[in-house]
Amino acid sequence: MPGLLPYLTSARKLFVMRNPQHWMIVGGLLLIGAPVTHAATTDSGQFSLSAGADYSSGKYGTDTTTDIWSVPVTAAYQGDRWTFKLTVPYINISGAGNVIPGVGRVNNGNPIGRGLGHIIGGNGGSTTATSSGSASGLGDITASAGYQLFASADRSAGLDLTGKVKFGTADENKGLGTGKNDYGLSLDTYKVSGDWTAFGGVGWMKYGSSQYIKLKNGFNANIGADYKLGPSDNIGAYYYYRERIADTGAAQSEIAGYWNHKFNQSLRVQAYALAGFADGSPDYGVGASLKYSF
Image (cartoon, rainbow, N blue to C red; front, side, top):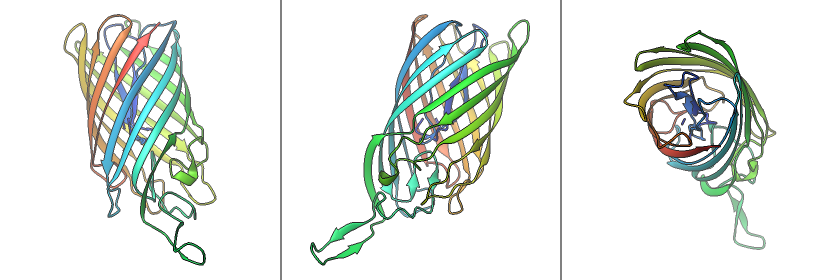
């Protein structure tokens, strides 16, 4: 969601249709990993605040299971054509020292990174590098701006362009991030037919490399469907893919299912679960978020 998913994830972003009868998820959870997901609103001219909790677990191609918790808080503004978001996450990670939230397995050369550089034996003692460790703290703050390029007269189809910046605010010495900024663009589309909504998108990210962690730029894509159960509920599922961005890493490949419930015009809740099918993704993840619109 791709929630914990990549920065989010990637993955995991929550995108809402401008058709007042439909709202849905688009993109990966990212477990922050990536996938977590964040709610947006179908109502124009509104501010919203959301908070959530995301959990993911996986080995990411290592011999050690890495568990990641993320608690993201998101502020958003939805205009007629523009959407602005700012997300501030708190992260706790326990596991392999070469697994970075939102990135996956890397060749981490940081001599004081998570699980590395512990001193044994006191004065004159030797130094040993452990393969795992735990850390927590502020994650990478993300900001995005989306613009509606096209919408049909009946709002049953649309196309949106979104720009995103991930600021390297997470502590690279704790292994909570790379310490560098990332920049991305994505193009998302949807088509409504009755109670069904089909959606998909493609994106590209320019990943920042640090002195110790080298990353490649990469493409990502998603495709899914949403079904409206009634006036207050909808469910859906989507598939997310991101190509490999680290030499020692792997591609992300995961599927997620979600449920959204609207208590009233102001308060909404979302829950999701995901499963990974590649070493770049967690084995599984779950999460939930609550959003209030003003």
